[in-house]
Image (tube, rainbow, N blue to C red; front, top):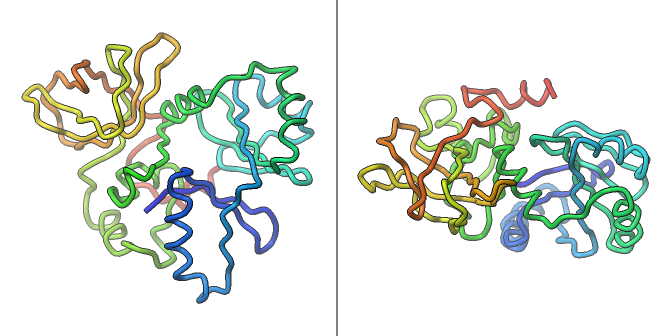
Length: 262
């Protein structure tokens, strides 16, 4: 239905971050269960997000935000500001703050760092093997197909949720036949989400979930693809595809143990 990042603001107060296209549908789905657990769900439009990344990002966070830089999927807070660490090729932090504080915080940061648009952040997501599902991808994949257990994003031991039986069976008894793969295209044309990944015989192996141009002007993508050995060369939208290494292992993982290590 959606993949989310969860962090705690205070005891009994949590925030869920997901793609903006899925906020309404996810809130409506979770609202069915809210009365049983005596919780309230409130979509927020009074909060803003700022991404801070780069080799000097930890030093900037300490000097300008007065916070200890968190590791991946960890969080720190100072007053109304929450800072959550994200995985990636360089240090990455996501700042969540009230919209009323954005202008002052942005001005303070912009005096010391280089402002860029969100495409660079999305490229780092791709390089981290991290995809955020949008409305067109809703209800299409098992969590394992987007490597969510490799990122510590799901529990196979507790909870009850939509599709739990299928998800747990795939983990404990079976083998997932599709996985999120990272790749580079030999070209600068960005494929649309949903574009087919084809083998040498033009047989569809999967589809693109996200794509951005790297520093050299070549397209990098994340695609859900069959795990069977493909017949090369592979291509997307007429461009040759080269598989790249993911920054995490895909062996049968215990997400709880993975979370403890981090």
